[in-house]
Amino acid sequence: MKTKAYFFLTVFFMISNVLQAQLFDKIKNKIEDKASEVVEEGLNSGKKDRKQKSKSGRIQLENTINFYPGDSIIYASNFSRGEVGSMPGDWKTTGSGSVVPVNQIGGNWLKMSERTTYKLNHSIYYPDDFTIEFDLLVAADKVDDLSSLYFGFTKDNSLTRWISSNTIWSAQLQYMNNNDIVVSSSSADIYQASNFDLETYANQVMHVAIEVHKDQVKIFLDDDKIADTKLFNGEKAKHFFISSPLRQEHKASTLFSNFNIRVYKD
Picture 1 (cartoon, helix red, strand yellow):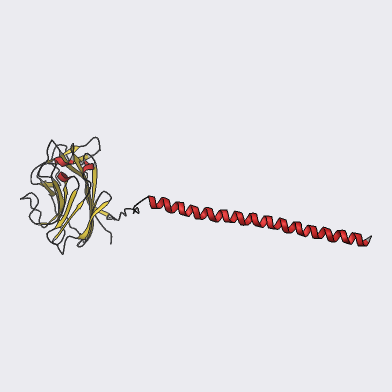
Picture 2 (cartoon, rainbow, N blue to C red):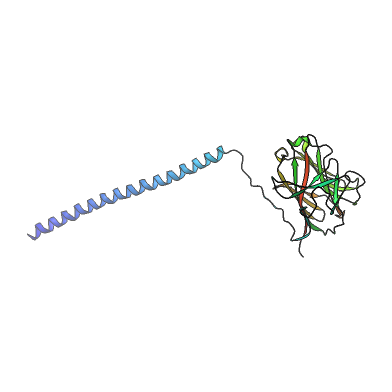
């Protein structure tokens, strides 16, 4: 009896071991199959991503904006105190100009006459490091109704000519060509021509920002840096100017506002 019982127990354990081994193999196979699927999915996903990236074409680079305005305002004007229809007292000109409201955009603006230069009526002390900001507006059916607008620095504050012959450096927006700009310095013997989409700025505000650190000058039109070079070449910043185009056809006008000069705290 004991022999039979022992026999049956032995058979039972043998069968049990076989079944366990088979079950283990099945589970093991399933795990291995699942792992293979996961790995394959990951590889395929990587291939898909690479394919999608390769189809996107050129690598996209973010435009890094690195204009840092000064901390303290030493002069600011938005022409809110100027009498509408008159030339503001803080500015002088080779011709004429008048403060006008622009209802569609808001605020008062200085409407510039054709072929006219504008400078501050009083001298400003510019340290080695400072910033200038202002807004430009072209009121026109299309920008090529105008020729070039200039802004920059001169050695003197005289207004005997349209754009002083003693210009240190200037930026030139060539509206008549729709997308040409020039930054030049007679002091540093620099002439840099490049492209910028001016055509879209008919009846749209353009923000101009200038950052100066001794000789080095950065110029921004909205979020685009158009210059970062030595423009003063040892000359001292003294007199800022802005000059309207020689030609403004079909009742086109150029205006500026929200002008400020800032310096950095020590």
